[in-house]
Image (cartoon, rainbow, N blue to C red; front, top):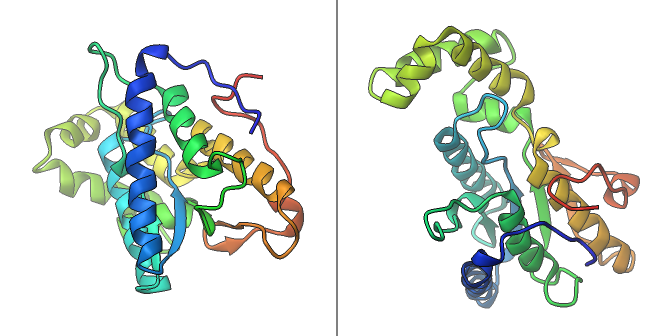
Length: 228
């Protein structure tokens, strides 16, 4: 697809295994007659988030989309496919993007395994926290306080003024694929796929449940981990 990443070669075998696993899961769902939806949700805690909270949000987005579309659709939750450590080192964004570029684009770059892409936005995040249209910061603060009673990691966030502010700021204002490096690359992957396809055969793209316009579907944005 013409995308390059500065990935650690030590992860090559692990990435290959990850690609094979995801493709097998997709084949299983295809054989069951289901549509395949890729749900791009930020996992990294960069900017004030908490990784395990983001993983839970990704799972909730998957559950909500599958409920909305019904039994005939299956949603790929990227949070499920975590790469194991190699020589004690965690995989970084570049390693994950090598894996997901191969999965989303396919061997020929035409993305035939994916029917639609959902890019998570603030409303998706707020739905997880059960926040309404008013007092979002208060809602997040109450959620954090309630969970901190039984979760040591969240207790540390709740009890630290700077960390608490960063948490509320992230989930109130920036919890969106718009601020995710990996999601930027994923958006560009789908744009390149759609440029290859004919009209009527392009992958449907949604941001926060809103269908992207024809211009958006074929417009690249700033890269995340891609090396240019």
